[in-house]
Length: 214
Image (cartoon, rainbow, N blue to C red):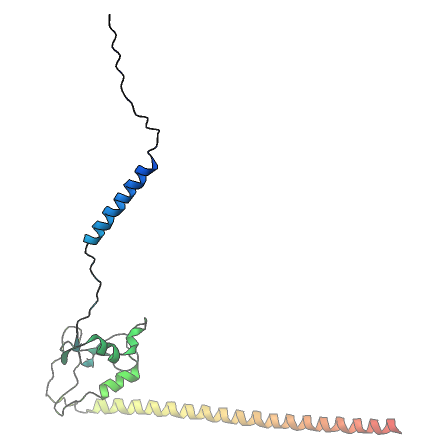
C-alpha cells in the first residue's frame, strides 16, 4: 500500500518584499513618467486684445420723470459716429468717472451746458422724445387766443389781488420795523441805566476806601 502526499505552496502575504524590488519599481515608474512628460505638449499662455468698436451717440432732450432740476438728457438712438480704436488708446482717452463703482449721473449744470453747446440751425427746433415716439416737428405758427372782455376782467382781478397782498405785506413790514426800533430804544435805555449803576457803585467803593485810609 502506497501513500502519496501532495502539498500546495501558499505564499505568506504578511511578508514584505525586499527593498531592492521596491526601489527598482519606483525607479521604473519615475522613468516612465519622465518619458511621458517629455511627449506631452505644454502650450504657452498668451493674451491678446483686439480693437474696440466705439459708437458715439448724441445727447438729446428726454422725458425722465425723476429729473428735479433742469432738463432731462438722454442719448439718441441714431449714432453720430462709429470708429475702431486700440485698447491702449481707449484706456488713455476714456473718462475716469467710469472707473468708480458709483452710478453714472450728470449734474443739472452739466446738462444745461450740454444743451447750450448743441449747434442748432435757424429752421431747427429742439427734439423732445416722448414716452412712445418722437413728437414730429411742425412749422405751424401758434397764435395766442384773442383777448376778450372776460379775460381782461380776470387779469384785472388777479392784478388787484396781487396789489392787495403787496399792501398787506408792506403794512406788516412797517409794523415789524417799528417794533424793532422800540426794542432798540428800550435796549439803549437799559444800557444807560446799567452804566449809571456801575458808575454809582465805583463812586461808593472809592468813598469807602478813603474812609478806611483815614
